[in-house]
Image (cartoon, rainbow, N blue to C red; front, side):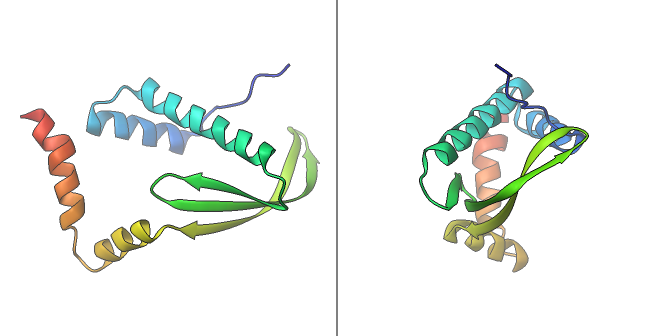
Length: 119
């Protein structure tokens, strides 16, 4: 049986490194959380008996996946799907705060979870 391909592209690797550097969490731990999250999503997709499968992304919202068909290229077989994103109200509120210059909740979070731990 093939092992799932949990490889990351350069942009994702850079993001994991940045998160690790900023927050002092080992990069392997961050990567492992994402691998288990991805695996959980695939289990959820497999267990849903609906035409549109739903993936819950913590703090972000939901992604709907509607399978269309498979396509084949030189790298193998890939699923083609329509994707729908529904942002959670809390994410939209934080996004609104950022665009409107009200960054107090983000600054408070950073102070509590990063700055205070350094002192």
